[in-house]
Amino acid sequence: MSKSCYNFIFFLNFNYILLDVNRYKHKELLEISNLISAIFYLDQDIDEQHELIDRLNSLAHILSNLTDEEYNLFKAWMKRIFKRRLPKEQHATFEDIIDKTKREEAEIMLSNLEENLKKFEAQAIEKGIEKGIEKGIEKGQKDGEFKKAIEIAKKMLQKGMDTEEIMELTGLSYDDIMRYSIH
Image 1 (tube, rainbow, N blue to C red):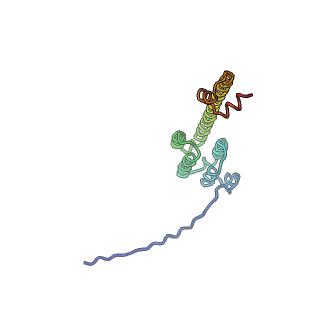
Image 2: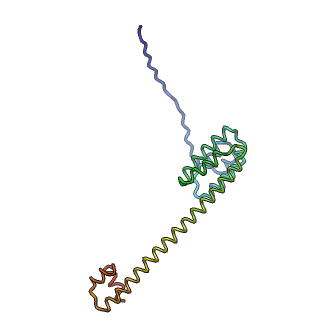
Image 3: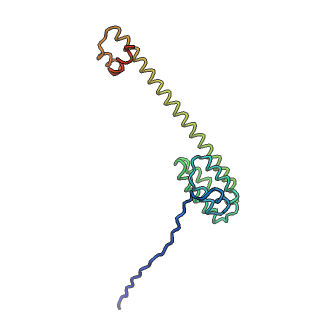
């Protein structure tokens, strides 16, 4: 019994179409009104969160015309878009909203996404304000401590204390003592 050995060589011939989604104008993509145009529309570069909200709202009419299969593809793509644009701690919330909706509920999904985007944006702003306040307080405390050390250094110099000793007791540098205490 002889074994036959066949070697097959397959050549795959792919044609790649490279598309720059940012070259399309918003109006063009909305007029096309299909799955691909909706994905391109969301996938374009966006600077601000509110722009993403506006784009989601303008897709409502397109989503209502998609088949169930197309809608599921859109949802999968939308999850990828949100993963790229949002902090990790927000991913689960948005995936949950997207996963739970059916095609007939597209407008409800868009509304829920918008509401959560606004909520997270407000939280981010609040967090930024809190950090700014904390840094301001910290800087104010350091400035106050520095001014107090200068006052003490001035008094020590008036009492004839040695500069080395003043540096050791106040934590000020020689330059700081000379610059601020002489005036």
